[in-house]
Amino acid sequence: MKSACDTVGAFQLENWNKVKAEAVNDKSLNQLVSFVDQQSEQMLVEALLKALPNSTIIGEESASENRELTEYTWIIDPLDGTTNYLHGLPVFSISVALLHNGEPVLGIVDCPVLKERFTAVKGEGAFLNGNRIRVSDNGELKDSLLATGFPYHNFAEMQAYIDVLTHFMQNTRGLRRMGSAAIDLAYTACGRFDAFFELNLSPWDIAAGILLVTEAGGRVSTFNGKESVVFENQILASSTKLYPNMTKVLQSSFK
Image (cartoon, rainbow, N blue to C red):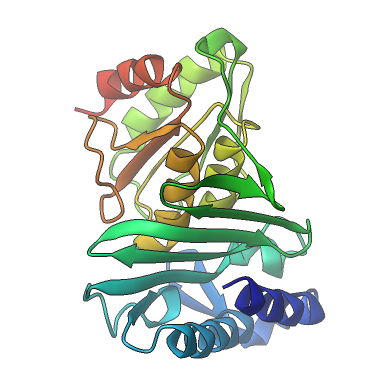
């Protein structure tokens, strides 16, 4: 996986700031795709099937073709943060997770520009560039820095989301919106963020990051506490100490 990410990351950097507007398509409202996304996924698929021939792959660019879980299933986002990438922002990542019978057991979030690689294997901890990482030790909202993602295509729960943002704006040190859920989760795993929450994400956005956070000692669930979240439409990832305060706020708005 590391070798595959090296190859894909080099390809993305080579083409960064070179993608023309006419080479970008809208998959749906505010969901962009370019030849970089598509070729990155193809490169990952070839490498991962070579490494584990009997596995299946669920990828962002081929999701309409396959969402079937088998004993071993890769869930990949070849370029998480495509909009950032296309606008020249250095915050984008490659996210690769391996699920065994539906449970994440191995994951990488690789940030080519930032030269940071987050890795985790179930039961063996989480690491940044080979150094062990842990979630923050903070349990107080007033001392916390949170990450989230703004709704950009599904606005059905907009008012509840605004209510939550209002509370957190008034009771924390601030909120950040990086534009890559995989990076948000990786930063939560290493303690840069105390917690991350978002709605309407897809499995490829979060599968690797979920393992990073749990292996770093954090908690991951839906807003109402369901712990199996890869295929759910909401996620809360948090330090263990802050988790009760986060769920209290989220559950007050999202019933």
